[in-house]
Length: 187
Image 1 (cartoon, rainbow, N blue to C red):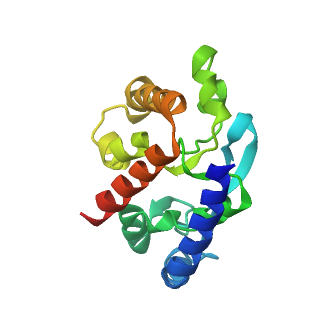
Image 2: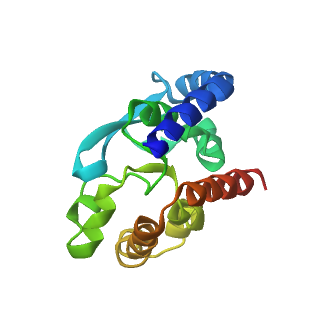
C-alpha cells in the first residue's frame, strides 16, 4: 500500500515537474517522425497481464517503409526522455517507479519455476538491471548476433537481478534505486 501511494505521489509530481519537457519533446518527436509523436506498445505487466506502455516516438519510416531512429529520436533515447510519458503508466497503476522494466511478449511471460516470481512485481521505470544495462542498445550493437546475445547473456542476467530485487525489496531500497537512477542520468 505504501509503495502504491508513493508511486501515485511521485509520478504525479514528476508529471507536473517534467510536463514542459514532455510537451517540448513530444512536439519535436512528432515533427521529426512525421507522426503523432507518441508510441504505444503492448508490454507484459504484473501477473503476466498485458498493458499499453506510453513512450515518445523515436523511429520514423521513409517512403519505402524502412524504419530508422530519427535524429531527435536518438537524443530522446540516449537521454531517456522518451520514457518520461511512462509516469502516466505509473499513475494508472500499470507500472511502479521501481521494478523490472516491462518487456514485450515472449520473455518475462515465458519464465518458468522460481523465475516466474518476477511477474508478481509491477514493472517499473527503473531497477538495478536497468541501471546495469542503461546502454543496452550500444552493447547489442557491438554483438555479431544481438538477439542471441540478448537471449543468452543480457536477459538471464536481468532475470537474476530482478529476482534478487523480488526477495530484497523495501521502501528504502526503492528510494536508493531512485537516487542511483537520478545521479546516473545526471553524471
